[in-house]
Length: 226
Image (cartoon, rainbow, N blue to C red):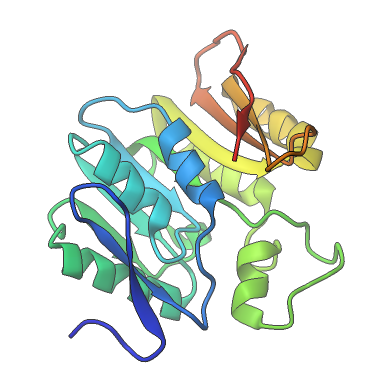
């Protein structure tokens, strides 16, 4: 009853949880699942999922870590937020996972210092970097049209409590951007992992986690193959 035209239920392969996907909207990739598995977990975490899309990162993280206190997903696009909200309803997890059709730039000051963990699978490409997808909703997910990497990290720094973590994925060519922006906003990178695809040897993606306000030594984990 919750499914609309061109929608399917995709199995998260954990405890029977499923996520609604629309064939005409941006569909999640394996990068999102890699991020939710990579991010560290502490019992009672209050989690935010920025650029949530249809909710895959936040929902998968909840599926892996049922002892979270709450997961708040923020998605700017109404259609994707609606899909996310109906997935929450389908799985009957309204007491733990929440969806807000809100740009992260408009999250209120009352959420400053609220979160112990922020997850974000961001747009990978800089605005005007070429190859913009003609479908507007997909372009917003892939390019920095509605939000930039700098905004994501600056806002995360405000919304994280002291000692809170930020976990993100991004294309390898933007690693220096990521490291410099995290440091500039007092989020210290302490865990880094590269991802290669198929039979390729050069990484195409990295996963990174930083902690707010605490100095930690950076650890580079073993490269994984996706």
